[in-house]
Amino acid sequence: MNILDYLNVSNESNPESDSGFIFQKLLITEILNQRPDWNFFLVASKKIPPFDSRVQVLPFINNVDKYKVRFNFPWEALKANLEGIADKVDILYVNQAEQATNLKALMATLTRRRIPIVTYFHYLAIEPSSHKHFTFSRTEFENPPDIIYDHGLNDGGIGQTVFMRQLEALIASDYSVTCSHFGADLLIHTAQRIAPSVSKPIKIINPPVSIEEIANARSGEKFKRKTVLSNHRMYKHYGIDEFLELMNRYFRENGEQDFELLFTNPTSNRSKERKRLDPSVEEIINIIKSTKFARIKYSRRREEYYRTVSRCHLAVAPMRPSALWSMSAVDAMACGLPTLCPDYACFPEIVGSESPLLFSSFRGFKEILMLLLNDRGFYEEQSEYCRRRAEQFDVKHTAQKFIRIFEQAVY
Image 1 (spheres, rainbow, N blue to C red):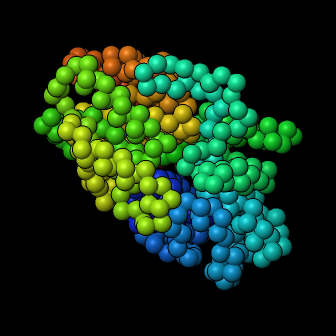
Image 2 (image 1 turned 180 degrees about the horizontal axis):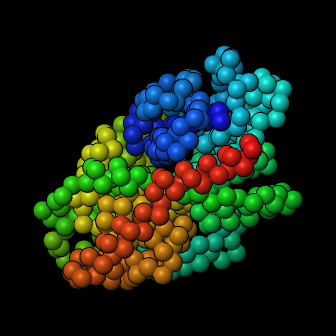
């Protein structure tokens, strides 16, 4: 089988921290391990590092921000790169949903045949219209608006336009895939408010984690001080400021503590354009630097990142009510870190709906944190539980699910 895989990455300055690149790097490598006679043609930025000799990369112009990756489609450059390849392609696999119909149209003009298309919805431009939101109390939206657009994709009110491109992809794709049942419900229910006839089922496949890669890179020792980890992006809409509020309140109520916060900051080395579009990251970094119980540690390579994560004591998932998944939370769990998760969005699917690590208020957060810091038996029990639960998200299982979809679409 010949697969044309369209990968768009906006964080070109540090691809090793880009979730889209890591996702496809792990997935493609494992699919080729399980199906060595298959071929991948990877449409990707010129700055994506080679990761497997069995993958033929079709480079195109660089994309440097979150809107360019969604709206700039290099038709002529791709057309030239696809000469001699297009007729061999059995299936299209698109990881930037907004570009699905563009790629479908280009391939139709080149081959004059209908090629099955699988689109993965890794990130949506919408948020749930009603959700549990908390820092100091639990509240519910009253009279929720029709649709709330993702803060990070709504500059100048463009969020609706981005989502319409995603809706277009949902309609045009033979198979639509997303990370969680929460994500599938959010996508289909919002889509039906705009286009009531949309009824396509959505496949659920989690982004992969490499248990083997983590096991090989894990450190055998912990930091001298107990360390609470935040290893996700520092965008305001990822809940970093809310997390800092929770921790500030915890320190105010309990005084000095024998632990610190560590931020790995996967949004480091941002381009000038990315900084201009979202200055909140630099603001949050400055706040962290001025917080006496917190520090930042950067990692340029995945091995270094895994060693850092594994040396921490526990982790806190991003407080993001629209999260379809959290690769950073699963990374922490796979390293054996008990990972506290807000009780909304995808997190009950990640850590388990009955897990004692779910919290829905500051009081609940504080109680779990104190137990993990002071009750060794509870800590070790949750550490082992998280490590084992992460195994079900291993790349081997993710690859098998994609293989089934590809084979069903083609054969």
